[in-house]
Amino acid sequence: MRESLVRILTLTGRNIKEILRDPLSFLFMLALPLGMEILFYFVFHKLTPQFEMKYLAPGIVVFSQAFLSLFAGLLLALDKATAFLTRLFVSQTKPHEFIFGYALSLLPITLAQSVLFFVIGGLIDPSLFGLGMIWAIPLSLVTSLLFIGLGILIGSLCNEKSVGGVASVIIMCQSVLSGMWFPLEGMGKEIVTFMKYLPFKNATDLIRNIVNGIGDPPLWKPLIVVLLYTAAALIAAILAFRSKMRAK
Amino acid sequence: MTAIAIKNLKKVYKDVTAVDGLSLEINEGELFSLLGVNGAGKTTTIKMLSTLVSPSGGDAEILGHSILKDPNAVKQVIDISMQETAVARKLTVKENIDFYARLSGQNAQEIQISKQAVYDIFGLDSVRDRQAQKLSGGWQRKLSIALALVSRPKVLFLDEPTLGLDVLARRELWKAIQALKGSMTIILTTHYMEEAEALSDRIGIMQSGKLLFAGTKEALFEQSGKQNVEEAFLHMVSGGVFDA
Image (cartoon, rainbow over all chains, first blue to last red; front, side):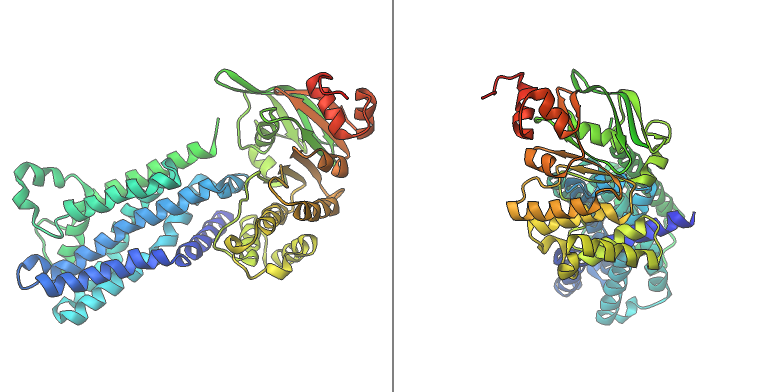
């Protein structure tokens, strides 16, 4: 048990260094969403309530997490491409330890994203500050695991050239299907019903509703959907990773 | 004492037989070179012995542990340096060594000893604070091989360790490999005949998944009637077509 924990933390430490030493990580995971938060607020918040900070900031937090899929997938795919992982397969490290190592390494970035976007949002519109925002920060770790799990799954299945394309589908889905930029109700009843079963709108609703103290739908509903997709993505990632380790 | 006992090892990919009933014994502390043209089955053999690929038939024991029945015990006594450079790109040389040492369960004191040992053998001290991705190809290969030593393996697999290196970098790596001789069992695959001649205690020649020859250089010269490994190798794999 102790050896397993040491291996997970060793892998996590290495992955954090690899991610933080890539300037593109900061650009896409922090700078770009922050720029969007500030720009869209000042341009649109008087035109549509969708861009008031209490709705925009939670949406940006979850949207920025979609980029975790890209960076988790890229890190894993590059490790595969350079034989780095093949060498580690000869060590005592188990498939789930690899997955935890990749997943945990992105959680500090998630935390930085939430704190940054909420604090800047609160400085622009102080009504954002409150108990709901404080609760939303730890809860955003849960939604981030969804995207991290999807990223690891993509990285396990794809090569370094195709990860970008597949991950951009997830980023686009989070952008278009989450309801963060425009209300989904305008897309028709069937579409809205369909979105209730996908994780993107549920992840955004979860953070938005806790920030704003909204109890309709109850918090547990989007939470259950997000947790189910997260568990499915992580289990699928472990299985895909295991199959890579046991080449036949 | 036998370090590696390979018994009728076989690997079949769909309609291609990569390794065909390989049987071989390698002694503890020996440096054994596997020679063969592309597709001879050298890398597949190394991958099976290092538990990366499951055999289709047969078995092998590494220091008494079966690669089929007890792969975890095998992993505790082996390490591998692949054909491709396998390092953490954005970590420094020092951080790469720390990473592998921690992963193999070493404590702070053991890590320090491991680090100094690979610094001494490979001369990595001068580039310790440089990121791996910023090193030259030669230094990256050195680091990649050095990392295979960090876990202090009893059996080391070196799959074409000097592939793509210039002559100077190759000679430096030879020196490092020679420094390891006797302290562990080494199985080395290579396309460079002079490398096998300079480094090996015994040589094995593979062709189409089968072992054509295993023995000392002297035995190879005697069997082939040639006076160097390259000529002897050509004679063995071509059936004398390239004989002068």
